[in-house]
Every structure is written in structure tokens, then in C-alpha cells.
Length: 232
Image (tube, rainbow, N blue to C red; front, side):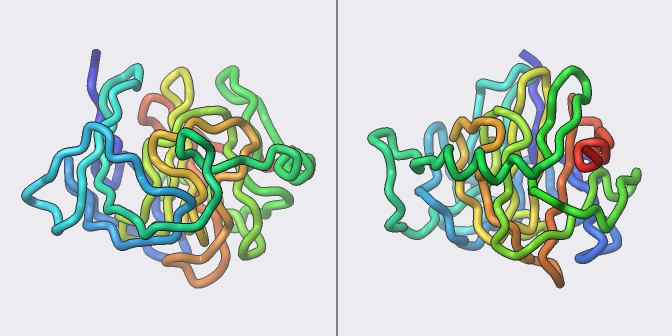
């Protein structure tokens, strides 16, 4: 099985958001910047975690080995305990009915044989896709629901990448990745399986000067223009 690093160099993982920086934030191979604590719905899973000497005290390196193209590695720190209700397995209880009603106003488009849902309803693109941004910036209301664009698995949920605020990265079939950054709060943890249209975060302005969602779509590590998803 081939291996990939989720936290690659800044030029290959995430693009630059126009509201926070002119160039991508630095990322060191194998070790992301130390993670500060952030509100989450449940403790991050520490399965197959090892302590790295190069990271700050209390930081853990997590490895996920179920990907078709190898191992995803990320650094996370144990979040504070919350009072959110959980299922027997520890996952946050979902509210499908509310999510279904909200996603009715969201657009969608088929790219690469996958029908992608717009991650926010009635979102307006304020920064177009380019080779520099590697994604789009979408304006919305603070606290607005952020949805999973397709079914997948959470391979990163944290705020360890400077310039992106609270960030979620989902792994989808056929080597697709989607990234959602500047969230007010992340509602899923690493290792969670999510459904298309499931609320995974609330739109925010962490490390941004206004409520914004920076959204990226990747195929085998290469950026894909997601603009059509928001035009329908």
C-alpha cells in the first residue's frame, strides 16, 4: 500500500485564504505546529497514537491506516471534556432531520462521478478558485451549519495549521479529500464516519477577519475546482 502524508507541504495540502494571508501557511513534513485546545463535540480518538519528541508536551501523533493510498498522519492535543450527548460508541449523536431541512437550500454538482453537496446553504463565493488559493472562500453567517459534501471519514479535526483556524479534512472514496476551514466550532472528531449532508461544523471566523468558509476539493492530492458545486 502506498503511503501519503495528510500534513504535506503548504503548497500541496491547503491553499491560501484571501482574508488571512497572501501565501500558504508553513507545514513541516510529519509534524504539524502544536495544537491549541478548541471546542469539540467529543474527545479525539487516541488509537494508534505515539508521542513525538519534536511536538509540544501533551501533543499526540495520530495515524489512520484505512486509506487506499496509505497513512494519514496528524498531530492533535487532547481537547477539554464536554457535556455533549454521545452514543454508546462515543460518537456525537447526529440530527438528520434538521440537517435534511437545511441542506435543501444548498447547491450540488457532479464532478468526477461524485455528486458533491455545497457545504453551506446560500453561500456566496467571495474569493475565486486559483492555483494559489487551491479552493474557494465562501461568505456566510457566523454559526451557520457546515455540511459534509459527501460521505466519508474524518482524517483531521483541529486547529494546528496556522492561518486556517478550526479545520476539518474528510477522506472520501476514490482518493478524494475535502477541507473546511475557519470554522467556529468543529462538531466531529478524527476517525468519525460522516454522511453526505451531515452537519460537521459551524461557520466562523477563526483566523479570519469575517465569517468565511475556505473550501477545498482534492483528487489524489491534486486540487479540483469546486466552483460548480456552488453554482447550482
